[in-house]
Length: 428
Image (cartoon, rainbow, N blue to C red):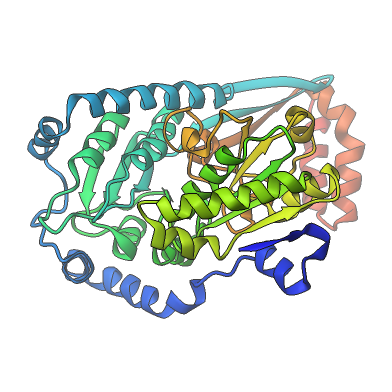
């Protein structure tokens, strides 16, 4: 982990932090091969790769109603209650994101313009799984799609070695409103949803987190076969703090981020050198005590604790970093927030851990990483709709626009465009 003043960062250190490397190019040949196999062999390819990568034989890929019922019986009631609590908050938050379905306004006399919102017909949600359960990702991907009005939400998630989906993930997907759930993961599932197979239907858009192979498949298939939400890489957090922050709390959040993956990144930028020293000591202590300490310690090598000259420098660095998760723990947190341009999701104050957004506060945890927060938004209801513009013009309104339309059309050499206006106005 880098520990120094922000102004003392070398060009190499700055580049390592701001331009996070991806293994994407390394996996492209293998991903392309799997996509090609799924395109040509359909379910046979899904069976081959599920056996190879998940060491599972699933029989029918689509989850049956009996399997869903059995999953509900196998999940403790308290966990089902917690899923319902999280789901309610996620629904409430995403309902607030919805725009009016249809609106029109008079932009000038006789000229009405507006917009109609139309949900996508089908969406595929990828939920990581296999050896671990990620029910939160099922909630985060399916719920906003259903809130947006998507008619058919298809979930693909890797099976366990026993050929079944983890019951907790299955319950979450069903509770969220998934219409169809399939026992297939990895690149092969992305290809299946993008291209269609005998079992898995083709969808219009694929959303959800995944490893570098899944991300590569989404990016490769984007445009030619399907739309996607955003590229994604290792998870990350950046913390902006001052003397009001609790060092034990900040260290805990850096450790929480680091336990995701050896490639995860945790960075803190503070205006208080004493806080930086205290956080460093706490990070080292908590890393030794972490259940996943091997992963944590490897991940922490990617991160940094930096001391900024002032808050302006800290904010500038954060905007350049464009973090997936941004914590602001400072006396003037709202003022600082006003200066933030690039972040996937923001967490304010000592009592707002990233874990709250990961699971239960209602905001979405599918977020842009690797600096993509400078141009991409986190998953939201807009990802699941199309916005169609509308216009209606009276003859009087067209008369007012005639000279502007015809002059610009003729300037572009499109005389038929100009004529389409003149012919209307020539009629009595």
